Image (cartoon, rainbow, N blue to C red):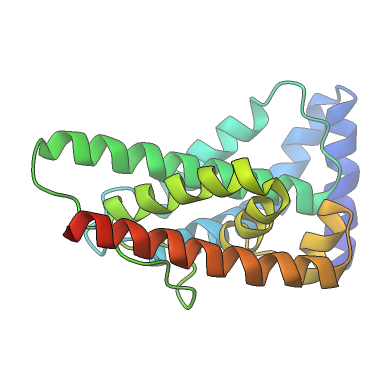
Amino acid sequence: MEFEASEITQLLQSYNTGDPQALEQLLPLIYGELRQLAAAYMRREASDHTLQPTALVHEAYFRLVDQKGVQWQNRSHFFGIAAQLMRRILIDHARKKIAQKRGGKDIRVPFDESKHGASTFSDILALDEALKRLKELEPRQAQVVELRCFAGLSIEETAELLQTSPATVKRDWTIARAWLHSELQDAINESDA
């Protein structure tokens, strides 16, 4: 895995410098991990979700390779961006589904840290709104949540990517989870009022 991680980093850097063959060599190395990431996302979704993991992987991959101006730093950076894109794809999908329903009151549920995600369309949107507010207040904490929850990075990988210490990531992770739980609980209370 360590050899593969350094090979992915080298290919990303080659792609940065304009080598189109690097992208062809990169796909077989990253596809499995992208598929695992998509499968983890989809496990958090409702069982009747219409988007399949393969479709999520393909959409994310096409958006990744279409990124303009991104200088890929390493494997962690790539998968961090992939996780953000997958989250955005699911949010867009949830918005479309809710818009199709036309009516009915969305029920929001609290952030369940044991699931690290949301199980209904309205849950996804509530979490997205809370993350946007957190990003305005504490951008690094929001990044930690995205990298830990959505990219599945470890404390150490997150620290490396954010160029900070693992202790700082642990502290940000703890504070951000508590803040998100409070925000999402407030949203439930407001919808019940």
